[in-house]
Length: 125
Image (cartoon, rainbow, N blue to C red; front, side, top):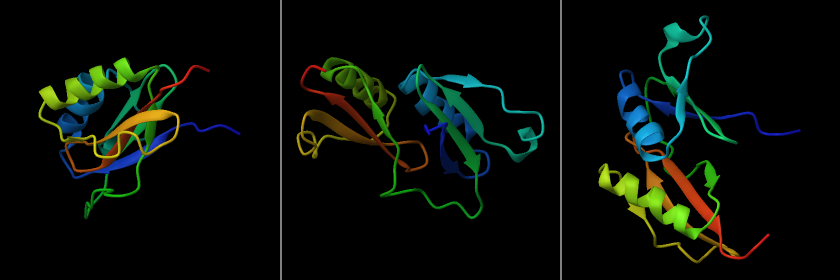
């Protein structure tokens, strides 16, 4: 068994904010949704080993605690990703930077307030 994708929600019309976070901030590529699902709104994003689906949900409530955790290769990649997000105006919180053994991490909020964890190993494989 393996994880295929993670689903997060956004309010109606929230696709551009999702693109800004996932494409501009984290470097994922937007991929076409199947034609049967296009009418539902939302957007899908894919990276080397991750896929995130952002779907429209009404009424919308952001995931404040539940979250995907995305692993980056090393602490420098983590700092670069966090820096891009901050430069775009997204909230990045480093208060739990060293609380996960063997990793450095931060938490970000996408354009809708959904929590996203970014982490990188601090020790070799």
